[in-house]
Length: 305
Ligand SMILES: C[S@@+](CC[C@H](N)C(=O)[O-])C[C@H]1O[C@@H](n2cnc3c(N)ncnc32)[C@H](O)[C@@H]1O
Image (cartoon, rainbow, N blue to C red):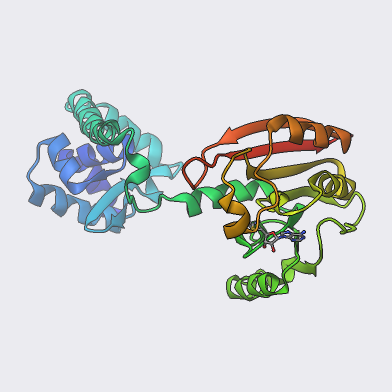
């Protein structure tokens, strides 16, 4: 109690409290905003922290100070607010804290202004496609999905972290074994079911799936239209098919090197097949591909309700 009363009588402590009430600040920022020596600021912060009028948070080598739990005490708060309001330096301190916050904002802005246009190539911690695609996969939370021609399962595994159930279909048992092994490693194997099957003959559970992915597998089959029809039969009303394939190209070598049957597709071709399978087209887009000269064609259809 004595310490609390001492606080209300000490101008330096009151100024520190007014500043941390305005924003969470580091010691260096408090020193700058209040124009007090670092030793003075540190000396006062210690008892303020002990009586929980401030609390601290360490970020690497910096320690930030903010309002503590006692600040919100219903009996104490009005008393404290009155004292803070009457502080002679209140007005100018507030302006200086604003200035300190503005320096932070400008530093951040300067950095991003400078890297605009080259941000993707920076190895910024926390960035990268894995993190971005994970965030997008959250959009399939609790959904029942299928991945037709799942290959090594990058998509299936990503979806398995959020979806309720993922059906992986591939002609290659070797691929499916690999996906299962990887699913065990990340602890999502209970969400996945595996089907070694030919997409052109597959009978998916009727009206069962919220979303069906066909990523870079359609150009391998003989009758892509048939595969789209079979996928459509597996979709619930309102369910979506998401096709990623190649845009029509003339790289004959893909037949030999990648076992491709079709040299990609025209947007109109996919549109027609989706339409004939009873799907409304929500999107057809040409995207930048991984290999130069080979663009990706994305088509998204939804089963009519
Ligand atoms: C290029 S990989 C694509 C893998 C993955 N979906 C992706 O986007 O990275 C094509 C996969 O489709 C599978 N596939 C090709 N034709 C198939 C068919 N008729 N039935 C089932 N799977 C097939 C292959 O075994 C292979 O794993």
